[in-house]
Structures are given as C-alpha cells and as structure tokens.
Length: 448
Ligand code: PHE
Ligand code: NA
Figure 1 (cartoon, rainbow, N blue to C red):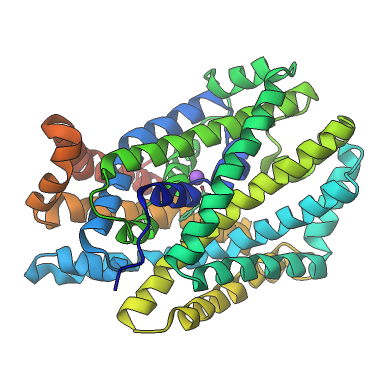
Figure 2 (figure 1 turned 45 degrees about the vertical axis):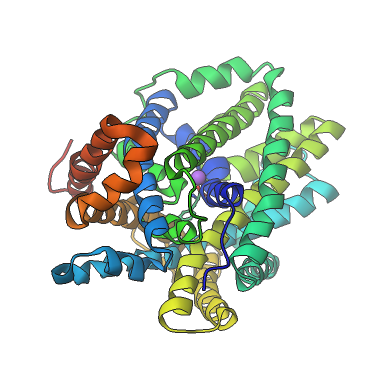
C-alpha cells in the first residue's frame, strides 16, 4: 500500500513546508510587534525548543511507527483497554478551522503579487485605503483569488504524497529559502537593521502581559504545525531507517530561523522607513507595500519576491493542513483520494467563504460575535486553544498511555538515554502542566 513514501530529504522539505508558512512570515512579525518584541520572542523560542520540539519528535515517532492515518495510528498504538484514545487522532479537524482563514490570506497574497507588478500604493494613507477597500468592499476580487488558492491546494493533494506533495515542496521550499536569503542580504545593509535586531531581542515589558504568553505559546504550536495530526500524517509516509530525531530537529530549526529572518527583513524595512512595528495584521499588507514603493525600482522587485515567498510558504502549509483529513478518509473510509480531497476542500471552502465575508462591510455585522469577527475567531480558536489542547493530549498519550518500550526502542538509538529521559519528562510533566495552567488562566479560573 505504501510504495508511496517520502525520501528523507523529501520528508524534511515537506515537513518544513508545512511548518514554514503564514505563521512565520505574516503572523510572527506582527504579533511580535503587538506584544512589544524581545520578551515575547523569548517566550516563543523557549516554548518552541522545550515543548514544541518534544511534541514534534513525538508526532514523527508515532507516525513513522505506524504508517497510517492519525486515527488508526493512535488506535493501533493504544493498549487493548484504551482504544478510545484513537479519538485524539481526530484533532485533524482543527485543520478545518485553520483552513477557513488561511486560504483567505493566500488570496490576499495573490492579489498583492499582481499589485506589486502593476502599481504599488505610493504612501501609507493610500496603502491603507487600498487594503481596506480590498478587504471590506472588493468581494469579487477576494473570492476570485481565494478560489484560485483552493484550486492549487486541492489539485496538489489529489495527486498524492509523492507526485503532488513531495514534488511541489521540492520546488517551492528551496525557492523560498533563496528568495529570503536575497531579501536578507539586502536588508542587512539598511539603516533600520540594527534597530530591528534590538527590537526583536531586547526585552521590553511594556506591551507584554499574560495574554502575550498565551499568544506566544499558541504560536509555538501553530508555527510547528503540531497538535493537529499534520506531522503524524506526513511521518506516516516517511521512509524507514531515517533518523527521525535529526529530521525533527532540522525542521524545527528551519522553521525558527525562517521566522527570525522574516522578522529581521520586515522590521529592518519598517524601521528604515521610520514606521511603527505594532500595526497588527496589516503590517505586511499596508505598511510594507508603501515602503516598497518609496524604494523605487528595486522596491518593486523586492515586493514581488516578498509576496511570492509568502505565497510559496502559505501554499505548502495549507496543503499539510488538509492532508490529514484526506488521508483519514482514504485509509479508513476507503474513499478514492480525489473524492476525499474534493469533499474536504469543498467544506473548508464554504466555511472559509464565511470568514472572508465576515471581513467585508456588507456582512461584517452579521458575522461578528463579541470582540472578534468570524475570521479572527477561527484564527484564535485554532491556534490558541485547539492546537495546544491537541498537543497535550498527544503528549499524555505518548508519555503515559502508549507502551514506553515503543518510544524507548525507537528514540534511544538516535538521542541516547539521557536525552530520551529529558524528552520523556517534558512529554509527561512539562508540556501538560504548563499548557494546562495556561488554559486555566485563559478561561479565567486562575489569573496571573
Ligand atoms: N505551521 C504553519 C504556519 O506556521 C501553519 C500550520 C498549522 C500548518 C497547522 C499545518 C498545520 O503557518
Ligand atoms: Na511555522
């Protein structure tokens, strides 16, 4: 059944393709800006390297042990009297939430690639009007690009792991890295570069509070694609005899480096133009385009490269968000891959349309609940709540429920006894306890 496996490098690129996405280039810089920089980055890095990396290794471990969809994987690994743990496999349904806002943003990116080629806004006021008009009134163009995004995503998945996912990632990921390297080389010599470094790494407590911690931790899960069976699913197609620990560490480091590099590029440009880093979600779509314009011809090239990089990163992630559900339908419900892909894509497409409309003037009043519209709710629920919960459930399953011999035999050869013990300690105690306390704080049971 599984002649269809990733090579080692194919897996690393596909898993990195999943991890590196809007989270790194769009979300990380703007939430860093909103939460004051340095301290926020520190909490994010600590969560990524202690909790995130351990859960990532855990997902690759069980995925590669079973070579099945996420539900079957957990079911098969659970002891006979605890088969109900298989329901944790259904965390892939979180993907449906993410897929509602993710392709909407991919649509914006497509629009901005075209805009960069045709005509960038010449100043900040104009840029803001342009983005807001697009977001709030230009329903047709938004739906057009949104639909295009879905077609690319669904087409690739329908082609399967090797011919679709691996092939696309093998092209897009190296291109993405080259583009970011070009942008980085350019920004290193800008005046704003040192200020960008200072902003990202120098502790600033002013805008940092307990909800910043939740955003940072939620983002650590989101950025690594963990807690929703994506990495389990990709690892199910991993070739045997791959050093899964080394592969995991490589992906986590790539994801982190790319987020930091994206932050440096964006903040260098922003500070060189004496702009504010705390502009929220519009940072990339409002502030940057006007700055690119003011740079002259070089700015146009930079803009095109930047938005293409963003599109590549986002498409490879969106694919990995859909794949676990598709794989489940293919393996457990015996659906042909094409049918599975198009059914799931259709449902996500319809929900995403609601998220898209919730941003527009004509519909926003009907599609807003409390302080957030549907678009923001989908984002918040998936990354700040569902993914961390999915992550702890998995940590508990691997740390307590599954036979310890399985993880020991598979991991010790690659990481040694000592690191295995540290890993197990994080899975059993550090990850569940810290996320649990954070959730209690979030729903207001305890306050810090
Ligand atoms: N990790 C991706 C990003 O940083 C988002 C993602 C989440 C992808 C969950 C797959 C699964 O943008
Ligand atoms: Na990421």
